[in-house]
Image (cartoon, rainbow, N blue to C red):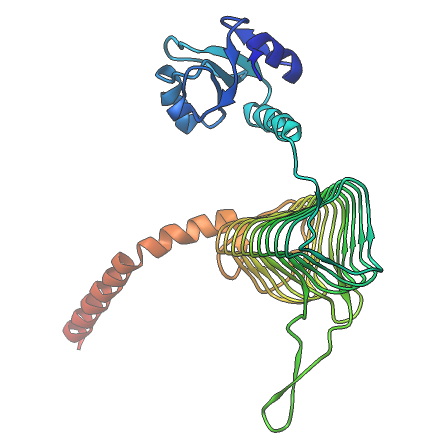
Length: 347
């Protein structure tokens, strides 16, 4: 499908600067722009590429000021990245999805399957599973007894959902995700061994949750591990048993949350963050990459970094000192030497 710059601008409420009749039929990165494609510029680090890009149309923020002539037709919008996301979503929705149920899938006679559902070969669906309309389940997924999937859910290859878990509407679980495996619960015994504590709860994903590839969310010991509406988890994220993650919180790759911790709304955790168990993390908390959190953070809308987590301004000042530790050590040695010399003279 082809669209003109004016059609695109009308859809995303932008303003055309250049040829409103310029046409595109695909997308490209700004540094690799090709004729007939639409690109975008939102990060100032990429400003240099806009002047030589061969993309026909480029989305830019309204406050972008070019330093010299730009060949492409520009569409100015409030937020170029958000506008691109909107356009990509429209294209994705227009792409024809697979449908039908493979005869090579195993589906329990007691399962309930909605309308327009796609079930690929080698899928296992257990007893009393409920699957909503327009849901897609790709190859080698396993959905155990009493699981419920909402409408418009996408399970990519190899997703495993243990018994009794509940998945809301519009959720996306990428390849290799495991929902509802046992939490890490073991009681030490007198002889030094560990006795397993049965994990009798489940996992609940509310609507509009997306889980990245090979991430795991453990079932609760009792009750539910809860992932609230709009949460987005990157690949390789681990959520422990009885954790609650608040609405619209996002976590980047290799983050781990230990059991029974409560994460607030609209938090942002960068890569390799670790949070200890039984803590409270306030709404709007931002944790920089590799931050370790051993204690609760109860003040909303604060940014932390380092281990143990400290306010980001303290971390930055400490980092400057850390980088100069060798020089400071040499200064201390020199002062010690001079003091020793002065003591000898006094004696």
